[in-house]
Image 1 (tube, rainbow, N blue to C red):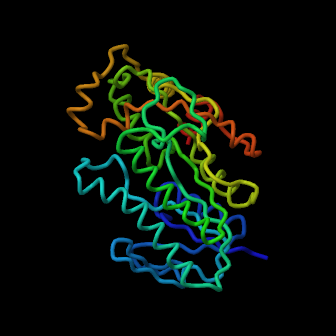
Image 2: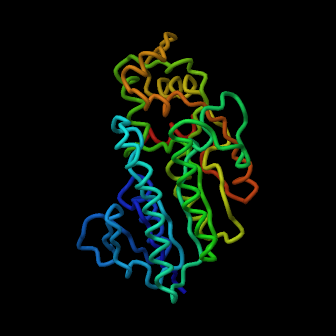
Length: 301
C-alpha cells in the first residue's frame, strides 16, 4: 500500500529534493506552505496566526518536519531571534494540535530536523547524541525546538530528530556562500580555522530522512553528519583545491567576523566535532564519507 507523507518546509533546499525522491519512490506527498499553489496536495498554514488546513494530515502515515526560518541570513535582533525560535517551536505545536484534534489520524512517525548547534561551541570534544546541551543562542534554540518535538510522545508517535550539520549542495545552503570568497581568490580560514565543521552531502541528507522514516527501529536524536568531519580551514582548503584557487594562510580575525556579522558569528565560529557512529550503527550507509568525494561530485555537475 502506498503511504502518504506530509512535508513541512518543502520549498527549502532539503525539502524540494526530499519531495522529489519520495515521489520517485512511489509515495504520495502532501506539503504545507504559507502560500496556496496549483498543487492539490499543497495545503496552507500560518504558523504565527495558528492557522492550518487540517486536511493536510488526512491519510498521512508520517510527517517530516523541516520548517523553520533561516538562521544566518539576517541580523540577530531580539525580534529575529524570537522568529527563528517560534518558526520551529510554534510550527511543531500547531502540527501536534492538529493531530490531537483529529483522533482518527493514521500518523505513526514524526521525523524532525534539528541541528548540531544543540551542542554549542565544544572545541575538539567528540560529540555524541548523549552529549549535553550547550550554551549560546543556537544551543538554546535547538533545545526549545527538540523539547517541542518530544511532546509528540504524548500522542504515541515515534520521534526522530536529525541534528544536521552543513548540507552541501550547489543549489543553495552554505556551499555557494563558502566558495564565493574562494572564487574571488581570497579564500582563507575563519577565526582560528580549527573549529570543526560537521557536513554532509545533500543526497545523504535526503536519504537519511527517508531511512529514518522507513526504519521504525530508529528513535530519538541522531547526528546527521558525515563520519569524517573537517575543520573550517580543511573545508576551505578543499574547496580551493577543487576550484583551482589559492588558499591563503592568513586567517580572517574573529573580531572582524564579529564586526561584520554581530552575534551571528557564533554560527561560523562554533566548533562541533560530531560523531556519526549512532546513525552508522542504525544501518545507514553514506554515499559520501569524504569531503573530497563530496566536492568532486558537486563541482562536476
